[in-house]
Length: 424
Image 1 (cartoon, rainbow, N blue to C red):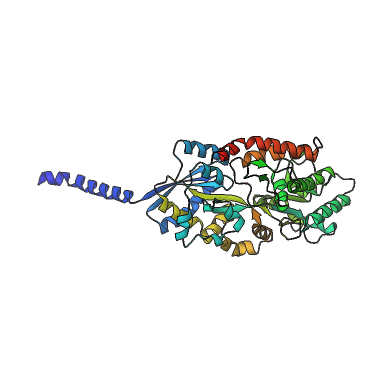
Image 2 (cartoon, rainbow, N blue to C red; image 1 turned 90 degrees about the vertical axis):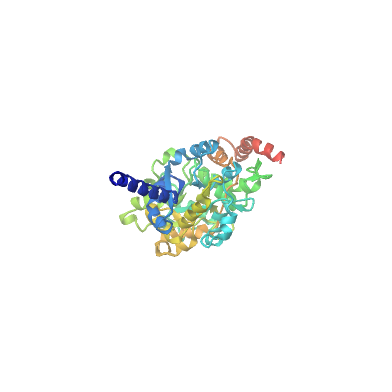
Protein backbone atom coordinates (compact mmCIF):
# COMPACT_ATOMS: atom_id res chain seq x y z
CA UNK A 1 0.00 0.00 0.00
CA UNK A 2 2.82 2.34 0.93
CA UNK A 3 4.51 1.57 -2.34
CA UNK A 4 1.35 2.47 -4.24
CA UNK A 5 1.07 5.78 -2.40
CA UNK A 6 4.66 6.57 -3.35
CA UNK A 7 4.15 6.06 -7.09
CA UNK A 8 0.62 7.56 -7.22
CA UNK A 9 1.85 11.12 -8.01
CA UNK A 10 3.98 9.72 -10.82
CA UNK A 11 1.00 7.85 -12.26
CA UNK A 12 -1.12 11.00 -12.12
CA UNK A 13 1.58 12.99 -13.96
CA UNK A 14 1.81 10.26 -16.58
CA UNK A 15 -1.96 10.35 -17.09
CA UNK A 16 -1.92 14.15 -17.46
CA UNK A 17 1.01 13.92 -19.86
CA UNK A 18 -0.78 11.31 -21.96
CA UNK A 19 -3.89 13.46 -21.99
CA UNK A 20 -1.96 16.55 -23.13
CA UNK A 21 -0.16 14.56 -25.79
CA UNK A 22 -3.49 13.30 -27.08
CA UNK A 23 -4.78 16.90 -27.22
CA UNK A 24 -1.67 17.95 -29.14
CA UNK A 25 -2.18 15.09 -31.53
CA UNK A 26 -5.67 16.38 -32.28
CA UNK A 27 -4.26 19.71 -33.40
CA UNK A 28 -3.25 20.13 -37.00
CA UNK A 29 -0.36 22.52 -37.52
CA UNK A 30 -0.13 24.16 -40.91
CA UNK A 31 2.85 26.13 -42.14
CA UNK A 32 2.18 29.46 -43.84
CA UNK A 33 4.74 31.72 -45.49
CA UNK A 34 3.67 35.33 -45.86
CA UNK A 35 5.81 37.80 -47.79
CA UNK A 36 6.93 41.18 -46.47
CA UNK A 37 4.73 42.93 -43.94
CA UNK A 38 1.84 40.58 -44.73
CA UNK A 39 3.68 37.76 -43.00
CA UNK A 40 3.88 39.87 -39.88
CA UNK A 41 0.42 41.40 -39.80
CA UNK A 42 -1.55 38.30 -40.76
CA UNK A 43 -0.70 36.90 -37.33
CA UNK A 44 -2.90 39.57 -35.75
CA UNK A 45 -5.90 38.00 -37.48
CA UNK A 46 -5.28 34.47 -36.28
CA UNK A 47 -6.94 34.65 -32.81
CA UNK A 48 -10.31 34.90 -34.58
CA UNK A 49 -9.40 31.94 -36.77
CA UNK A 50 -8.50 29.87 -33.71
CA UNK A 51 -11.93 30.58 -32.18
CA UNK A 52 -13.54 29.12 -35.29
CA UNK A 53 -11.06 26.27 -35.65
CA UNK A 54 -9.50 25.44 -32.26
CA UNK A 55 -8.00 22.24 -33.65
CA UNK A 56 -5.83 24.07 -36.18
CA UNK A 57 -2.60 25.90 -35.40
CA UNK A 58 -0.92 28.17 -37.95
CA UNK A 59 2.85 28.45 -37.95
CA UNK A 60 3.51 31.71 -39.81
CA UNK A 61 6.90 32.63 -41.20
CA UNK A 62 7.45 36.12 -42.58
CA UNK A 63 9.69 36.09 -45.67
CA UNK A 64 11.26 39.33 -46.96
CA UNK A 65 10.08 40.11 -50.51
CA UNK A 66 13.70 40.55 -51.60
CA UNK A 67 14.46 36.92 -50.76
CA UNK A 68 11.03 35.46 -51.46
CA UNK A 69 11.46 33.91 -54.89
CA UNK A 70 14.88 32.43 -54.13
CA UNK A 71 13.60 30.93 -50.88
CA UNK A 72 10.50 29.50 -52.54
CA UNK A 73 12.53 27.93 -55.35
CA UNK A 74 15.02 26.49 -52.85
CA UNK A 75 12.18 25.09 -50.77
CA UNK A 76 10.62 23.57 -53.87
CA UNK A 77 13.91 21.95 -54.87
CA UNK A 78 14.29 20.41 -51.41
CA UNK A 79 10.62 19.35 -51.28
CA UNK A 80 10.11 21.63 -48.30
CA UNK A 81 7.51 24.18 -49.36
CA UNK A 82 5.00 25.20 -46.66
CA UNK A 83 1.38 24.05 -46.75
CA UNK A 84 0.20 27.54 -47.72
CA UNK A 85 2.10 30.47 -49.14
CA UNK A 86 1.63 33.88 -50.65
CA UNK A 87 2.60 34.47 -54.26
CA UNK A 88 2.64 37.65 -56.32
CA UNK A 89 0.07 36.84 -58.96
CA UNK A 90 2.65 37.13 -61.77
CA UNK A 91 4.53 34.28 -60.09
CA UNK A 92 1.61 31.85 -60.21
CA UNK A 93 2.40 30.60 -63.77
CA UNK A 94 5.99 29.79 -62.74
CA UNK A 95 4.95 27.61 -59.81
CA UNK A 96 2.22 25.92 -61.84
CA UNK A 97 4.89 25.10 -64.44
CA UNK A 98 6.96 23.55 -61.63
CA UNK A 99 3.92 21.45 -60.66
CA UNK A 100 4.10 22.84 -57.11
CA UNK A 101 0.56 24.16 -56.68
CA UNK A 102 -2.68 22.41 -55.85
CA UNK A 103 -5.42 22.70 -58.44
CA UNK A 104 -8.18 24.38 -56.40
CA UNK A 105 -11.11 23.52 -58.66
CA UNK A 106 -12.47 20.84 -56.31
CA UNK A 107 -12.17 23.03 -53.22
CA UNK A 108 -13.86 25.85 -55.04
CA UNK A 109 -16.77 23.70 -56.18
CA UNK A 110 -17.60 22.87 -52.52
CA UNK A 111 -16.96 26.28 -50.97
CA UNK A 112 -19.80 28.49 -49.79
CA UNK A 113 -17.34 31.33 -49.06
CA UNK A 114 -15.15 31.65 -52.13
CA UNK A 115 -16.92 32.18 -55.45
CA UNK A 116 -15.51 33.56 -58.69
CA UNK A 117 -18.26 36.19 -58.87
CA UNK A 118 -17.11 37.65 -55.53
CA UNK A 119 -13.90 38.90 -57.17
CA UNK A 120 -12.92 41.39 -59.86
CA UNK A 121 -12.74 39.34 -63.04
CA UNK A 122 -9.35 40.59 -64.24
CA UNK A 123 -7.74 39.86 -60.88
CA UNK A 124 -9.32 36.40 -60.65
CA UNK A 125 -8.04 35.51 -64.12
CA UNK A 126 -4.41 35.98 -63.07
CA UNK A 127 -4.80 32.75 -61.10
CA UNK A 128 -6.36 30.73 -63.90
CA UNK A 129 -4.03 28.49 -65.87
CA UNK A 130 -5.49 26.33 -68.64
CA UNK A 131 -9.02 26.81 -67.26
CA UNK A 132 -8.17 25.73 -63.69
CA UNK A 133 -7.74 27.94 -60.63
CA UNK A 134 -4.44 27.67 -58.74
CA UNK A 135 -4.59 30.68 -56.41
CA UNK A 136 -7.17 32.72 -54.52
CA UNK A 137 -6.66 36.51 -54.71
CA UNK A 138 -5.73 37.76 -51.23
CA UNK A 139 -5.03 41.45 -51.70
CA UNK A 140 -4.98 43.39 -54.93
CA UNK A 141 -3.44 46.38 -56.60
CA UNK A 142 -3.36 48.14 -59.92
CA UNK A 143 -2.02 51.37 -61.43
CA UNK A 144 -4.01 54.57 -61.70
CA UNK A 145 -3.05 58.25 -62.03
CA UNK A 146 -2.29 60.57 -59.12
CA UNK A 147 -2.80 64.15 -60.28
CA UNK A 148 -2.84 67.78 -59.23
CA UNK A 149 -6.44 69.01 -59.43
CA UNK A 150 -5.46 72.67 -59.25
CA UNK A 151 -2.98 72.48 -62.12
CA UNK A 152 -5.31 70.43 -64.34
CA UNK A 153 -8.04 73.00 -63.71
CA UNK A 154 -5.75 75.86 -64.76
CA UNK A 155 -5.18 73.88 -67.95
CA UNK A 156 -8.93 73.78 -68.54
CA UNK A 157 -9.68 70.31 -67.14
CA UNK A 158 -12.09 70.30 -64.20
CA UNK A 159 -12.23 66.51 -64.43
CA UNK A 160 -9.37 64.20 -65.29
CA UNK A 161 -8.81 63.46 -69.02
CA UNK A 162 -10.69 60.39 -70.16
CA UNK A 163 -8.85 59.66 -73.42
CA UNK A 164 -5.30 59.54 -74.78
CA UNK A 165 -6.04 62.63 -76.85
CA UNK A 166 -7.25 64.57 -73.81
CA UNK A 167 -4.26 63.44 -71.73
CA UNK A 168 -1.86 64.69 -74.40
CA UNK A 169 -3.78 67.95 -74.81
CA UNK A 170 -3.88 68.57 -71.05
CA UNK A 171 -0.14 67.87 -70.84
CA UNK A 172 0.68 70.43 -73.53
CA UNK A 173 -1.46 73.04 -71.79
CA UNK A 174 0.15 72.36 -68.41
CA UNK A 175 3.59 72.71 -69.96
CA UNK A 176 2.53 75.97 -71.64
CA UNK A 177 1.31 77.34 -68.31
CA UNK A 178 4.82 76.75 -66.88
CA UNK A 179 6.57 78.40 -69.84
CA UNK A 180 10.24 79.00 -69.11
CA UNK A 181 10.22 76.87 -65.96
CA UNK A 182 11.69 73.39 -65.59
CA UNK A 183 8.37 71.77 -64.81
CA UNK A 184 6.61 68.92 -66.52
CA UNK A 185 3.08 67.66 -67.02
CA UNK A 186 3.58 63.98 -66.24
CA UNK A 187 6.23 61.69 -64.80
CA UNK A 188 6.76 58.58 -66.95
CA UNK A 189 10.03 57.09 -65.66
CA UNK A 190 11.66 54.88 -68.25
CA UNK A 191 12.93 52.56 -65.53
CA UNK A 192 9.32 51.49 -64.84
CA UNK A 193 7.88 49.14 -67.43
CA UNK A 194 4.27 49.28 -66.25
CA UNK A 195 3.18 52.40 -68.16
CA UNK A 196 4.42 51.03 -71.48
CA UNK A 197 2.57 47.75 -70.98
CA UNK A 198 -0.63 49.42 -69.72
CA UNK A 199 -0.95 51.67 -72.77
CA UNK A 200 -0.03 48.77 -75.08
CA UNK A 201 -2.75 46.61 -73.56
CA UNK A 202 -5.20 49.48 -73.99
CA UNK A 203 -4.23 49.48 -77.66
CA UNK A 204 -5.05 45.76 -77.94
CA UNK A 205 -1.42 44.64 -78.10
CA UNK A 206 -0.88 40.96 -77.33
CA UNK A 207 2.65 41.90 -76.04
CA UNK A 208 3.86 38.44 -77.13
CA UNK A 209 2.67 36.22 -79.98
CA UNK A 210 2.64 32.62 -81.23
CA UNK A 211 1.61 31.12 -77.88
CA UNK A 212 3.78 33.63 -76.01
CA UNK A 213 6.92 32.32 -77.72
CA UNK A 214 7.94 35.48 -79.63
CA UNK A 215 7.90 39.21 -78.91
CA UNK A 216 5.19 41.30 -80.54
CA UNK A 217 6.75 44.66 -79.75
CA UNK A 218 7.22 45.70 -83.38
CA UNK A 219 3.57 44.98 -84.15
CA UNK A 220 1.45 48.10 -84.87
CA UNK A 221 -0.54 47.88 -81.61
CA UNK A 222 2.50 48.00 -79.32
CA UNK A 223 4.41 50.42 -81.53
CA UNK A 224 1.58 52.99 -81.52
CA UNK A 225 1.31 52.91 -77.71
CA UNK A 226 5.10 53.08 -77.32
CA UNK A 227 5.33 56.04 -79.69
CA UNK A 228 2.53 57.80 -77.82
CA UNK A 229 4.40 57.65 -74.50
CA UNK A 230 7.86 58.40 -75.89
CA UNK A 231 6.31 61.51 -77.45
CA UNK A 232 5.84 62.94 -73.94
CA UNK A 233 9.58 62.64 -73.35
CA UNK A 234 10.62 64.02 -76.72
CA UNK A 235 8.31 67.04 -76.37
CA UNK A 236 9.55 67.66 -72.81
CA UNK A 237 6.12 67.01 -71.34
CA UNK A 238 7.81 64.40 -69.12
CA UNK A 239 11.33 64.42 -67.66
CA UNK A 240 13.62 61.81 -69.24
CA UNK A 241 16.13 61.10 -66.53
CA UNK A 242 15.05 59.35 -63.35
CA UNK A 243 17.82 61.23 -61.52
CA UNK A 244 15.80 64.41 -62.03
CA UNK A 245 13.24 63.11 -59.54
CA UNK A 246 14.83 61.90 -56.34
CA UNK A 247 11.63 62.16 -54.28
CA UNK A 248 8.38 61.76 -56.24
CA UNK A 249 6.23 63.03 -53.37
CA UNK A 250 8.25 66.21 -52.94
CA UNK A 251 8.35 66.74 -56.72
CA UNK A 252 4.55 66.32 -56.88
CA UNK A 253 4.03 68.78 -54.01
CA UNK A 254 6.38 71.30 -55.65
CA UNK A 255 4.59 71.04 -59.04
CA UNK A 256 7.68 69.59 -60.74
CA UNK A 257 5.18 67.25 -62.41
CA UNK A 258 1.41 67.12 -62.13
CA UNK A 259 0.53 63.52 -62.99
CA UNK A 260 2.06 60.20 -62.00
CA UNK A 261 1.01 56.61 -62.75
CA UNK A 262 1.37 54.44 -59.66
CA UNK A 263 -0.37 52.14 -57.20
CA UNK A 264 -2.24 52.18 -53.89
CA UNK A 265 0.94 51.85 -51.81
CA UNK A 266 1.59 55.54 -52.53
CA UNK A 267 -1.64 56.87 -50.95
CA UNK A 268 -0.21 57.16 -47.41
CA UNK A 269 2.96 58.89 -48.65
CA UNK A 270 1.11 61.41 -50.80
CA UNK A 271 -1.12 62.21 -47.81
CA UNK A 272 1.98 62.97 -45.75
CA UNK A 273 3.32 65.42 -48.32
CA UNK A 274 0.07 67.02 -49.52
CA UNK A 275 -0.90 68.73 -46.29
CA UNK A 276 -2.37 72.12 -45.38
CA UNK A 277 -3.17 74.19 -48.48
CA UNK A 278 -2.22 71.23 -50.70
CA UNK A 279 -4.63 68.79 -49.08
CA UNK A 280 -7.52 69.53 -51.45
CA UNK A 281 -5.34 70.01 -54.53
CA UNK A 282 -4.69 66.42 -55.50
CA UNK A 283 -6.73 63.41 -56.47
CA UNK A 284 -6.69 60.01 -58.12
CA UNK A 285 -8.23 58.92 -61.40
CA UNK A 286 -8.61 55.69 -63.31
CA UNK A 287 -6.54 55.34 -66.47
CA UNK A 288 -7.67 57.16 -69.62
CA UNK A 289 -8.68 55.03 -72.57
CA UNK A 290 -7.66 55.29 -76.17
CA UNK A 291 -11.13 54.98 -77.59
CA UNK A 292 -13.19 56.75 -74.90
CA UNK A 293 -14.62 53.66 -73.18
CA UNK A 294 -13.58 54.89 -69.76
CA UNK A 295 -11.68 53.69 -67.86
CA UNK A 296 -8.95 52.26 -70.02
CA UNK A 297 -7.46 49.00 -68.88
CA UNK A 298 -4.69 48.75 -66.29
CA UNK A 299 -2.66 45.96 -64.74
CA UNK A 300 -4.14 43.24 -62.54
CA UNK A 301 -1.76 43.11 -59.60
CA UNK A 302 -1.66 41.79 -56.08
CA UNK A 303 -0.92 38.59 -54.19
CA UNK A 304 -2.66 35.25 -54.07
CA UNK A 305 -2.88 32.41 -51.59
CA UNK A 306 -1.69 29.09 -53.00
CA UNK A 307 -1.56 25.58 -51.54
CA UNK A 308 1.43 23.26 -51.93
CA UNK A 309 0.21 20.21 -53.79
CA UNK A 310 2.17 17.86 -51.50
CA UNK A 311 0.65 19.29 -48.33
CA UNK A 312 -0.91 16.66 -46.07
CA UNK A 313 -3.22 19.24 -44.51
CA UNK A 314 -5.08 20.63 -47.49
CA UNK A 315 -8.53 20.61 -45.89
CA UNK A 316 -7.25 22.58 -42.89
CA UNK A 317 -5.34 24.94 -45.15
CA UNK A 318 -8.46 25.60 -47.21
CA UNK A 319 -10.26 26.65 -44.02
CA UNK A 320 -7.59 29.30 -43.46
CA UNK A 321 -7.90 30.45 -47.08
CA UNK A 322 -11.66 30.80 -46.61
CA UNK A 323 -11.14 32.69 -43.35
CA UNK A 324 -8.73 35.16 -44.99
CA UNK A 325 -11.22 35.61 -47.82
CA UNK A 326 -14.04 36.71 -45.52
CA UNK A 327 -14.98 40.33 -46.39
CA UNK A 328 -14.87 41.41 -42.72
CA UNK A 329 -11.43 39.87 -42.23
CA UNK A 330 -10.20 41.47 -45.46
CA UNK A 331 -11.42 44.86 -44.21
CA UNK A 332 -9.65 44.29 -40.90
CA UNK A 333 -6.47 43.40 -42.77
CA UNK A 334 -6.72 46.60 -44.83
CA UNK A 335 -7.03 48.66 -41.65
CA UNK A 336 -3.89 46.97 -40.33
CA UNK A 337 -1.65 47.20 -43.37
CA UNK A 338 -3.43 49.10 -46.21
CA UNK A 339 -3.65 46.02 -48.46
CA UNK A 340 -6.68 46.45 -50.72
CA UNK A 341 -9.27 43.68 -50.35
CA UNK A 342 -9.77 41.24 -53.19
CA UNK A 343 -13.40 40.49 -52.31
CA UNK A 344 -15.78 43.04 -53.82
CA UNK A 345 -18.15 42.97 -50.86
CA UNK A 346 -15.47 44.51 -48.62
CA UNK A 347 -15.46 47.57 -50.90
CA UNK A 348 -19.07 48.32 -49.88
CA UNK A 349 -17.83 49.48 -46.48
CA UNK A 350 -17.72 53.26 -46.00
CA UNK A 351 -13.95 52.94 -45.55
CA UNK A 352 -13.86 52.67 -49.33
CA UNK A 353 -17.22 53.96 -50.57
CA UNK A 354 -16.65 57.37 -48.94
CA UNK A 355 -12.95 57.60 -49.71
CA UNK A 356 -12.41 59.73 -52.84
CA UNK A 357 -8.91 58.35 -53.41
CA UNK A 358 -10.07 54.74 -53.22
CA UNK A 359 -13.00 55.16 -55.61
CA UNK A 360 -10.58 55.56 -58.52
CA UNK A 361 -9.06 52.17 -57.62
CA UNK A 362 -12.51 50.59 -57.30
CA UNK A 363 -13.46 51.86 -60.76
CA UNK A 364 -10.16 50.72 -62.22
CA UNK A 365 -10.43 47.19 -60.84
CA UNK A 366 -13.42 46.67 -63.12
CA UNK A 367 -11.06 46.95 -66.08
CA UNK A 368 -7.74 45.29 -65.31
CA UNK A 369 -5.97 42.55 -67.19
CA UNK A 370 -3.04 40.23 -66.69
CA UNK A 371 0.40 40.32 -68.27
CA UNK A 372 1.56 37.26 -70.29
CA UNK A 373 1.36 34.16 -68.08
CA UNK A 374 4.84 32.81 -68.63
CA UNK A 375 7.73 32.26 -66.26
CA UNK A 376 9.98 34.55 -68.29
CA UNK A 377 7.68 37.58 -67.99
CA UNK A 378 9.44 39.40 -65.17
CA UNK A 379 12.83 39.03 -66.88
CA UNK A 380 11.35 40.56 -70.03
CA UNK A 381 9.58 43.38 -68.18
CA UNK A 382 12.32 44.39 -65.80
CA UNK A 383 15.42 44.00 -67.93
CA UNK A 384 14.34 44.60 -71.52
CA UNK A 385 11.32 46.89 -71.84
CA UNK A 386 12.88 49.47 -69.54
CA UNK A 387 16.21 49.30 -71.38
CA UNK A 388 14.78 50.12 -74.79
CA UNK A 389 12.31 52.71 -73.49
CA UNK A 390 15.26 54.64 -72.09
CA UNK A 391 17.14 54.45 -75.41
CA UNK A 392 14.11 55.59 -77.42
CA UNK A 393 13.32 58.45 -75.01
CA UNK A 394 16.92 59.70 -75.29
CA UNK A 395 16.96 59.36 -79.08
CA UNK A 396 19.79 56.83 -78.82
CA UNK A 397 17.67 54.61 -81.05
CA UNK A 398 14.67 55.27 -83.26
CA UNK A 399 11.35 53.75 -82.23
CA UNK A 400 11.68 51.08 -84.93
CA UNK A 401 15.26 50.25 -83.95
CA UNK A 402 14.36 50.01 -80.25
CA UNK A 403 11.37 47.75 -80.81
CA UNK A 404 13.23 45.51 -83.29
CA UNK A 405 16.05 45.10 -80.77
CA UNK A 406 13.52 44.48 -78.01
CA UNK A 407 11.89 41.74 -80.07
CA UNK A 408 15.31 40.19 -80.70
CA UNK A 409 16.27 40.12 -77.04
CA UNK A 410 12.88 38.77 -75.99
CA UNK A 411 12.99 36.08 -78.66
CA UNK A 412 16.32 34.93 -77.22
CA UNK A 413 14.81 34.80 -73.72
CA UNK A 414 11.92 32.72 -75.05
CA UNK A 415 14.11 30.21 -76.92
CA UNK A 416 13.75 27.56 -74.21
CA UNK A 417 9.99 28.06 -74.15
CA UNK A 418 9.80 27.44 -77.90
CA UNK A 419 11.84 24.27 -77.47
CA UNK A 420 9.53 23.06 -74.69
CA UNK A 421 6.45 23.82 -76.77
CA UNK A 422 7.93 21.87 -79.70
CA UNK A 423 8.20 18.76 -77.47
CA UNK A 424 4.49 18.74 -76.59
